[in-house]
Length: 454
Image (cartoon, rainbow, N blue to C red; front, side, top):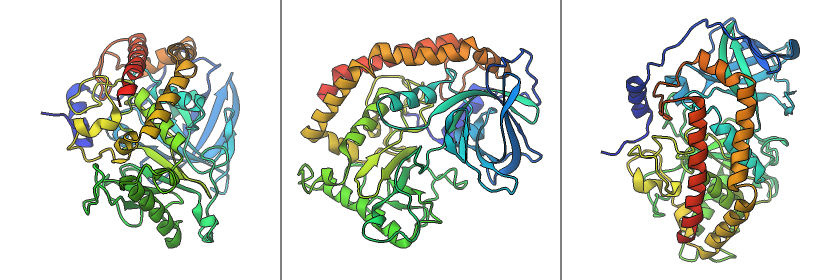
């Protein structure tokens, strides 16, 4: 019987494969390294999923406070929030009047909203960080990161990754700002950010798609018109409360026109086919990044799209790669194998979140496939070469091990000999890193051989 990676299945696995024991009010035994940014958060109220709680935050480096601010903080994440003792957080910088106050943190560009990602099931601690670095290295922006250690209300919580939240901004997703009044023929064309995902994070129901927060595709996973909704597009920017009816109608019609063209018999036509609606290069790079790191959630969850003013639809940025890089339970039967993620439906046809027909259809076009193969081969010469991929991982490993961050994290979270879903191998951090590197090298070489056969 095939294993379906759903929230309920993960709950069962968590209960069966790890004790998920917490250490409340933990105090670090090993002296911390003063050269590592140490973030201290103090909140008089319990930090919950929503709403954000008022708190103070400071960052100490070399025994000096280098940054401080009032913040609003909340829990974030679906699986991690429900099943893991180590939580992730989202926070907003605020002034004394409790108003948003943008600022630069640890050299990252100024903004108000930030994420504290706490790797737990990912025992390498690095999957998201490595994925985002690779994306930025090939010229596709996604969140930039910094390593820190975190303390909340006097309790040491270990290794965390401070990262940018993906949002419209000149230094993040650089698309035109869109206000409710921007409804002229020119301005209404952008910018928009859409997301293919569960609705968790907006509410407690992961399938609570409504006409206010999203709109459905009219096509099923095989490119056939259907009244049974399969894929929904969530409004990410402008937010549902801010997008005007005429703007919502515009972006819905744009996606519908693209899908109609892609599903048509003449979809390869350069003037009236799919190429009229999408930035092909961005789709190719998204495909390469998703397949290289085998992100099982790719295409169907945590998937961003953007439509800038006067421009075509783009894929990205990539997001949420913590079950990528050959994780144990990525496909429904739990096998760690080399395979194409865009063919996910062949392995997991009864999953609630399936890969849309776009990708199989695009690859059936010889022009798209030829561009994809050429781009892959070009990237493999430098940015995605075996040596460069090893170097990217090694540089991060050196940074977090020589500073003692890894040792202190696993002193706090003694899980290396436990099976933690979804990356449920046992062993040392060194073993986890070695497995990640060897898998990535083998998978890249598997793509080298198989990409011509698509």
